[in-house]
Length: 198
Image (cartoon, rainbow, N blue to C red; front, side):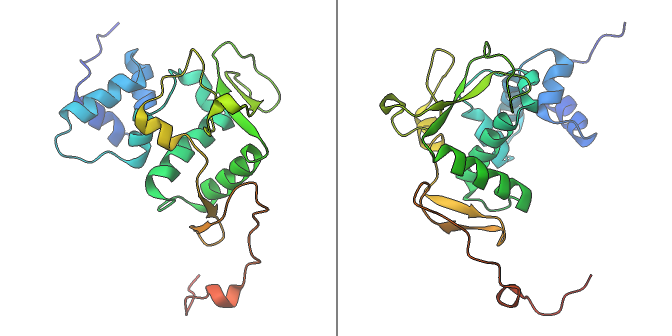
């Protein structure tokens, strides 16, 4: 068996150029995603982190690769990006899924993570579950338990947004969750940008 090269910024950048993400690189080297992120941040010079990388820095749990297949995991990851960018650069699919996720949470629910939660309807790998919102949740969209490590910045990010996504416009629009938010009907004439080329 051939020895793996040491985990260095050059190795990480080379693997990223081949299409791997930080989680896949972490699996390959038998380290956590946070360790890969640390290498990038520490040795990456003045390269700015992406919104996803910044969101994962305030990720409140230690989650291994088996949880990445969960839609809840993916929506929470997208939520962090949304909060850090105000939705700028997020595509229609992400914004649509986030809108549905926010509407679900707006019905008095929060997300709890516990690696011991078994797989259940809608959460193939387990680990995540929707729970009824409690006063002790203090306005967060996640339930703080023994598995949660929440920074001050995380307390700002892991809340429902004040501005909701408008996937049809590819932008965001003001509106409060739980207050009967709905999209206005799409008007193609109002959305026209002049000549359209297929």
